[in-house]
Length: 319
Ligand SMILES: CC(=O)N[C@H]1[C@@H](OP(=O)(O)OP(=O)(O)OC[C@H]2O[C@@H](n3ccc(=O)[nH]c3=O)[C@H](O)[C@@H]2O)O[C@H](CO)[C@H](O)[C@@H]1O
Ligand SMILES: [Mn+2]
Image (cartoon, rainbow, N blue to C red; front, side):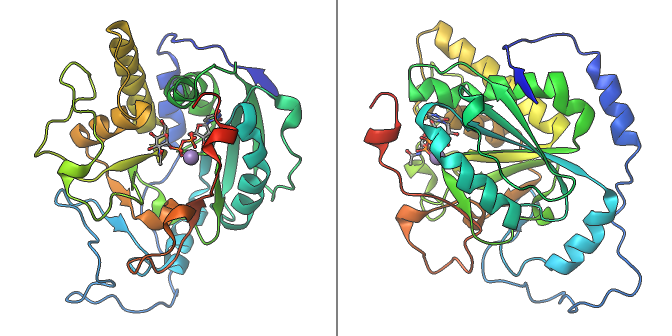
């Protein structure tokens, strides 16, 4: 199905429908009775990396969780996971491999709704989807600047939650299209509000983070403050929590625009402001969004998804 997405911001009556959907779910963490798995140790962590934040949100790395146990708990919940991916202008070329590799590694055996936003619906590749998985195509205008294409995602995600996703999905994850899956990217990532540590900043000090540093911007973060530098290419969580996030970031982007300010890294700067003040309930290690340009570093046991090398001069609208 192809819909034409117009940026809107209408009434809140859909929240009631949303509450009905949530009530039908059992949120108990039920494990099947005779499932066998390795005993967890109370005194030794599964890994030598930081696996919990100072506000007690888990940080997800390989070996901090048991994939079979996670699947055994989450699969019977019959969840629907929406994912948004933008393929505007030349970025349509990345969509085929994104979807094909997602079918191999992303939430395998779960119901997944891919929401694809593009200016070229007829170019969306035909991909064989496993049972229970669907593609929805939404037509969006092609904006002139890559900064605006990237930043407009906050508003478009807000709109699609209001118009459709609130009725259909439990969780929503929002990802860049210029990436490929290589390894399990599964239900261990599900949580209320989920941020992703940027692959270039996980080992730097907070003062090196490229936060927005001008006090005039709503995304302003002063020096001496900050937890992680979160990447704009991936965030997610329950539909309610992601809705609050995209709505606030969109409002702040508009407030800045009215003052003639564009944050240093557009929506990524606003996302970082939001997640500093609204702590994520789960944080994904860089395994979940790596960058091919960085090679593999010692801390990385696996690479689950990686941004592919691209020629910025060739794919971006204005450089
Ligand atoms: C290393 C680096 O420079 N990282 C920044 C850069 O990420 P990226 O270089 O990863 O940004 P990008 O060019 O991949 O754009 C982000 C996403 O927007 C969509 N898109 C973008 C342009 C376009 O013409 N068509 C289209 O569909 C597409 O889904 C893409 O994956 O920019 C982002 C957005 O501001 C963030 O600030 C990142 O931190
Ligand atoms: Mn990207």
